[in-house]
Amino acid sequence: MATAAITHTPTAAQLAALLPTRRGVAWQVGPVPQGIRANAATARLVQGERALDVVERDGRIEVYADRPGMVPAVPDAVITQTGPDPVAELAALVLRVVLPRLEREAARDTLHAHGSEQVIIDVAQNMNEVGFSLIDHQVRLDLVGRPNGVGITWTVSSNAEWGLWALGGTGNLKLSYEGPVCGLYGLLPVLLPTAEGHEPADVGSAFTRHLTDRFPQLRPLNADEVEFGRHQDVHGYIALPAKDEPTDHADDSRQVAAEFTDLGADLLLAAVSHLL
Image 1: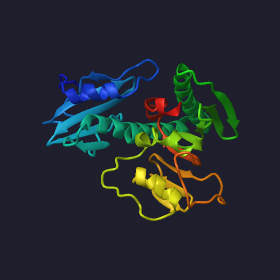
Image 2: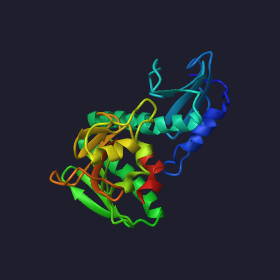
Image 3: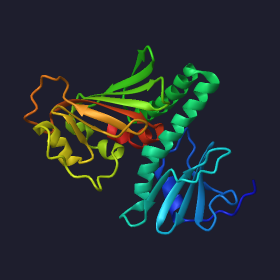
Image 4: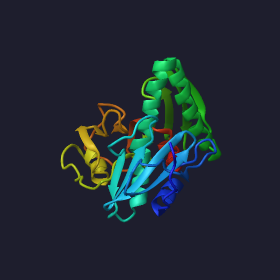
């Protein structure tokens, strides 16, 4: 297909700068195939075999993931340009929703073509990439084997233990945590959707309200657990380590166990500083 000249928009270059480099390759602004998004300011971001079309029109910024042989009619992500930092908002949406979705689609294709073992190998390579980023931050990692995959674990100065798991299935990664609840305060804003439109849940226990007051996107599941997200999107839970622990008090030092699932490698690379 013929290509058109690049429509230089500040949004595309700014978005590229906010998305992490993968295996030494940064996102670059590239030419857009003709006729992809007519009558709109459009730029294509390219990183290896991945490409995203960034479209600005009618006060909105839309992102369309390039899928070979397809011209999607519905954007993979869309925001209005009325917020205080729309490009940062868009980058968060791309990291949390769009790129993990592309990983899942690639895993489904790999499963059909090469089987489940190759899916695990590919996800383990993504895990290793995050692991090397952690090592660059002076983190000591331990490799852990499981029947359905592999993982790495590490302990931070608060004695909290993190785990990152490449397991069979979706093609995404799982993150686990055991430690003081305050150790999650830096990571949660990266994983959670925007707080706009959410109100703190005035229900549940002192433990759940301690979390939902700070992060109204969290939903009390019962007196000792909160959750967020949904299947095939970034989702997870934070809970007390045991069902018999009292739920009538909470502070930032309260020990919790947490799991976050369907995480893309890009999201984790962007969040490494919150895993230390």
